[in-house]
Length: 307
Image (cartoon, rainbow, N blue to C red; front, side, top):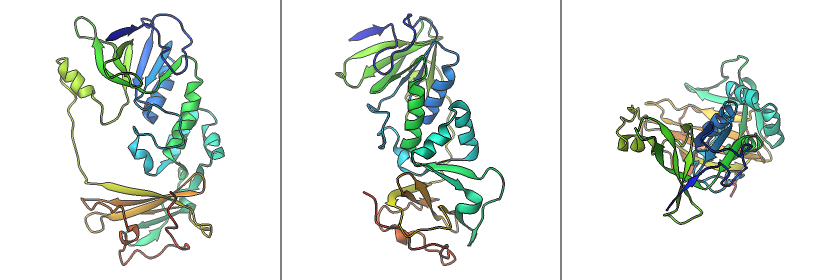
């Protein structure tokens, strides 16, 4: 069953225009950070912008199924948060008000490299904003949801591209509402489609089935892996550092790790393995044990896990 959608008001915020989607409409697949920013920018050039995402709940303080990497540490480096601030004035202040932590790397980062604890290069761009990925996404999401002309469709999946009769131009998408039966689908017209759905995107298969050559892929596999847990920051920890990075240096020392602060008095604690040395998910204290990795100026690490 297929129904033609003539307006971009199927769930989410109703768009400001009631005209047909034959007018200038852009569609963004995926509400990742890239997708949200793309929609924000496109909103300056299109009458309507529709974001579609598989996840049923987008504004959440928890981890979304569609963003598995969100469980690992996230930090906004200086350039990144300046760009976000440019597009969303006051965003940094809002993140800090919700518990994000400003980290001055040249003063507050314990950095282990080449057998010793060091200071990172001292320059003006060392301020970063540390927080969880859900916090960053939710703050941007709330800003975008109030932007005129933006429609957000959670719980929807793009299943195929619509083309013109000559298969020369994409004219929209075929959608499946994940709240409805599997056979139910609809069409969403678009003058521009932006795919921000990540590495699992079906776009290469869509293009191939339509007779187009998919973009060539070059894979450079460093066999890099992470394992992350979230801990309560110890009440006895008083610094002098807020964040810690033990840099892996394959092949001689392929093990590394980091501690990044996040909102609500928690730490992201991550083990890093390179060149196929994949970190364990249990007994993390046994992972980083080089003889030269002297203890940084701190109290006892790895407190009780925050469940």
